[in-house]
Image 1 (cartoon, rainbow, N blue to C red):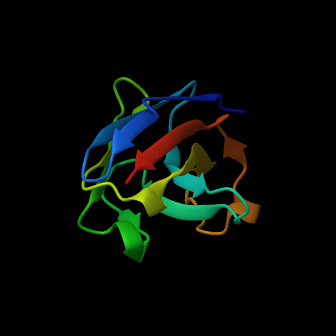
Image 2 (cartoon, helix red, strand yellow; image 1 turned 90 degrees about the vertical axis):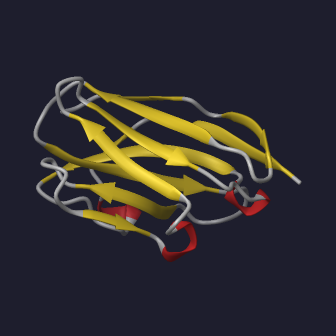
Length: 120
């Protein structure tokens, strides 16, 4: 069992930047981020393998978001640039052994979420 704690959400204007952090209580997990906007299903945003060698993004954030991790601190980051109003959502940190699936229904570990609001 791993505990995940997110931080870094907030209110930002369109075109601005935010960095989310997720601290994990354990090691050797693939980790990533999902988001859920009001009235919508939770969607995959980005994932990074334990060693950092495999990174994936949903198409809508490619070129704007960057996921990274510091295994010495058991922390994963999501740098979000050129934010758009449609990026507004609760962002959830996620983790799993071996591989983080893109389908939220198959993810085993979740943080409580942090709200990101992008104003136009």
